[in-house]
Length: 223
Image 1 (tube, rainbow, N blue to C red):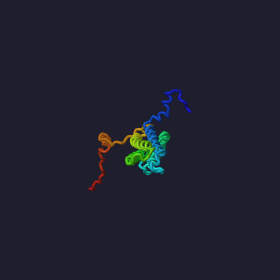
Image 2: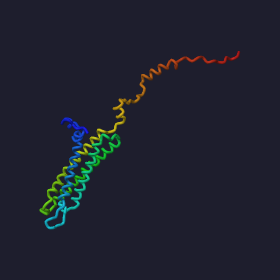
Image 3: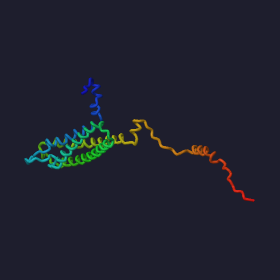
Image 4: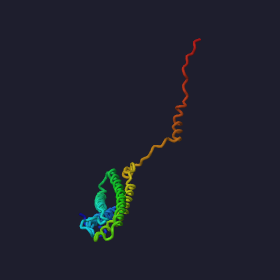
């Protein structure tokens, strides 16, 4: 294991350069925000109301709201971790078809998660708005944190979709591009023969074509 000798070597190391990439930063933020969403509701999302000892979801006693936030947050967190691992091993993926398929999957998931978090924010905010005042003694801070970070997840996943589109544009397969870059092979197309070359060919063949023909032998009539 190589130990950097100075701060400059540490800053230029592969791990630091990987962490400084915009894609890595966005994925880390998406993972952290998702972690906050489902962890806050798992810890304080279910409380008993002032008039009952039974546990209810702090978002208007809607179990669907808490289940949605916990499930979506957990899945988004795992998705961010999975693509972080794929980004770390990106240099080892040499198959262009596999690489393009992963980039398309990244784009599709980013668009889907953007829609999921937008719908989730509207749903959670609506449940919180209809919550009767002072129904729960604790848990309001967890609910507010979940709603806030659900909203913040929307631009984060939009950024991931934008970066995925940029990756697809930069790594678009071009026919013979690898051969041109590596071997310096220039592909040219055959152009139709010009009029000059046709005239030259015709003039070169004209002496033979215009050569006088020999007299034909004819039978002389008998006297």
